[in-house]
Amino acid sequence: MIDVRPFASLGGANHGWLKAKHHFSFANYHDERRMSWGRLRVWNDDEIAAGTGFDAHPHRDMEIITYVREGAITHRDNLGNEGRTEAGDVQIMSAGTGVVHAEYNLEPETTKIFQIWIMPDVRGAKPNWGAKAFPKASKETGFAVLASGRPGDAGSDALPINVNGAVLATTLAKGQSLTQRLGADRAAYLVVAKGAATVNGAALGERDGAGIVDEATITITAEEDAELVMVEVAKE
Image (cartoon, rainbow, N blue to C red):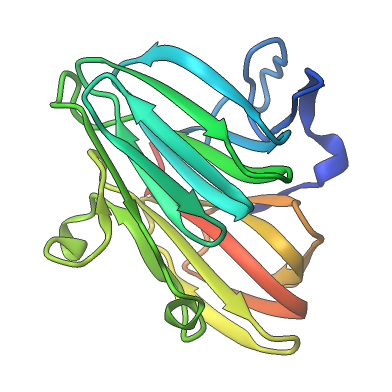
């Protein structure tokens, strides 16, 4: 089953400095049909104006992944971590027992990100932050595993998260296809960051999402040059 969620159908809010679209219920947007997808709880499509950002605020017991689409985001937290993550790269924050962080766009132009929250398998873990550059070439031969807590990815260079799931990304040239296997107990959520594609024949435009479940394999074909991000988690 593939549940296509067009960008125009998403909830959202315009705070001036922040334009946010929500694939799932978040803040003042509530839709009982869009609460989560397996252990995936939040997928926000944020545009952050230059020189602004999220002031220091707390989190706990959540795996928070930021995929930068355009621009860059600068992270600071109460554990002493600080870093700048650029377009095409990713940062993770395992909130665990608690962390206070801020995320700023210190660039001269708008920064565009996907902010992804996944519910952890274990509560009360030690907080952790990390960021990693993923060169475009690493995504051109299939899905690159950006962050993972799946047993099969142990020892890989993926950023660690406290959940049996993964965040993946790929780039496809127009007309190029790839096939990805999914286990019977797995769910996936795919968003087209740029371009357009079909997933098992279902059409997705730029920034559209697709919830995928009970599909043994998915075949993705780029209708134009495309960049895609996918989360794979337990179906629950």
